[in-house]
Every structure is written in structure tokens, then in C-alpha cells.
Image (cartoon, rainbow, N blue to C red; front, top):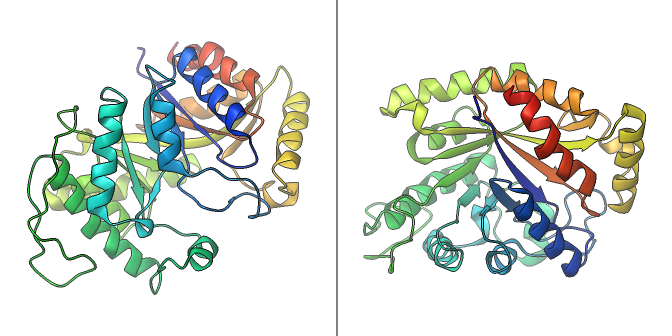
Length: 315
């Protein structure tokens, strides 16, 4: 059964625009289902003060040099922008890309980039997640053709806000990233079309059970939410060769190996190794996988993940 979908997030850091755009073109040519960028303002692996490209303008540029892959942020920082503006940006991207936009959004976590740019970070995760829920509610209404007026006190004050023109897609999908059990997953249950999570099989199974309970509580059909698992594959003929390639990537991104050795989202090994990890997650309902690929954008992994590993998983 050919039910596996693959997407690629190209790290925004430590690259030139020419290399970044060329990698996006290649992802599209290879037939990946979607193409993602981070929504950060500083590098998030290694030294934060590395070259870094902004996410929304990246997606707009990619819209004109790609033709197939859907485009989104994994995921947008809700703190950076007013949700009415974000809905309009997603609608504009949808038109620029002929209906390929995904609105990725999350609560935000990287305090340094907020303080450096003078962006309010809130009192903690709890407050930011309250902002996220309010924000996503408004964006879902706007994208679906409704009008938003704030009825009670909160983070935002909307006044007969409407979005014109409508997106090309009848339902422009919202992707929410994060696995907080009390707030984030409840927001996912209420509004998301796609959910992105990372971690071990046991952790993902548990988080999925929590999401299902939230869906029951809010009266949502849980099958309407596409589960996506994040990973960082490095694929070679041998594990030693994959390890060497990984170390070279981290060195370029100024990231000490001690900082990533215990990160179980790095899947470093042979095609069979990576396929096995995907099969384990597919068995618990995660049929979509999104690979983060660091500069210098590992061409071998990009080609082998969709060309060799995907058929193994689907066999």
C-alpha cells in the first residue's frame, strides 16, 4: 500500500541563497510531497550567530522555482506576527504557488531571538500556548471565509477582520508542531489538519493517545488529522560512512557532536536502518515523515530516502 508521504525541511542556516534555492529545486524534482523552512531569526543548531534566511520570504521565493511540492514553515513562530497577518501571508502564498501552501504554526521557544529583536516572548510556555490557541482559532475562521471580531479579553483584538481573496485551496491546511499534552495537543485536536511530532516510538504512541482523547473531548474526528514524524536522516551504504557524513555536516553548522549525540531524531545509517525506524512509526499511525536536511544539503540522502527507503517501507 503506497501510503507514505515524505517532506523535506532544508535548514535555513549556514548556507548561501544559491545553494538553498538549488536544494529546493532538487527536492521538488525528486517528487517529495512537501518542502519546509524553519521560522527562526537566529541559527538553532550550534552557534546562533550564523548566516540565516527568513522563512516566509523563503517560501514565497520557492513558490516561483518549484511546481509540485507543497510549501510551509515547520513551524511558524506565533509570537512573531499578528495572526490576521499570518493568515493573509498564507493566502498570498497559496495564490503564488497555485494552491500549495500549508500554514505551519507553533508556540515558539527560542528566547534569544526574541530578546535580540525586541519581540515579546511572554511569561512562559503556558502563556504562549494560550496565545497560540487564540491565534489558530482566528486563522482557521479567516482561511475558511469567516469574519473575526474579538468578543472577550485576550492577546488579540480583532474588529470585523476578513480575508480576501479566499485561498485557492478549499481548506488551506494548518500544521501545528509540538506535543504539550494539556494545551498544544488540545489546540491540535480543535483546529489542525496536520500535526508534527518527534521522538521515540513509545513517546509518539503516548502523545497520539493523548491527542485522541482530546479529539473525543472536543468532538473532532481524529482521522482528519495527519500525523507527521520529524527526523534527520543521513543515509549511506554503511553506518561508518553515514557517521562520517553526519560529523561533516555538524562541523559546517558549528555544532559540536556532544550536543547532538543523544538526539534520537538523527537517523544515521544504512537505507535499511532508516526504513526500520519509519516502519515502527508507520505501525502506530504516522504515515508522513519530514526530514530535516542541514547545509550543504546532502544530495545522496535526498535521493536515496525517496528512491530506496520509501519503497522499502511501503513494500
